[in-house]
Amino acid sequence: MKTTLAVLALCMCTTGALAAVPECRVIENANARLSCYDAAYPPKMQKSGVPEQDPSRAADKDPFSTEDAKTSAKLKNICRGC
Figure 1 (cartoon, rainbow, N blue to C red):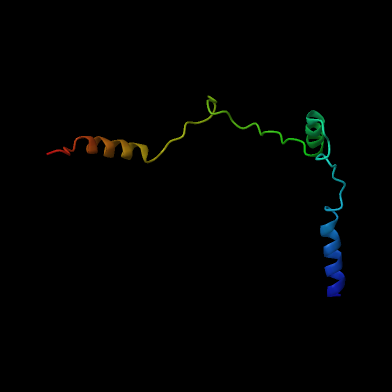
Figure 2 (figure 1 turned 60 degrees about the vertical axis):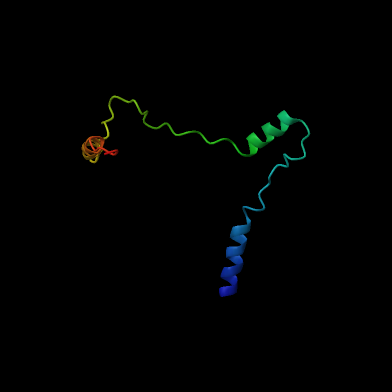
């Protein structure tokens, strides 16, 4: 039983390796070789995300920005050469 499952699992894993892959390396012409690679591995389309300057998007509010500004103001008033 275990042997049968192992053989079936091995057969399922090797089906992807048996897929026909074009030999683009042997093509001499650069443009033809690139088109072969493009056909074999098409480029991924970029996801259209929310643009950074979208007015409908709420502004990010950093809870530490006010505290950071206060701390920076206090540090500027310290005399370092006294």
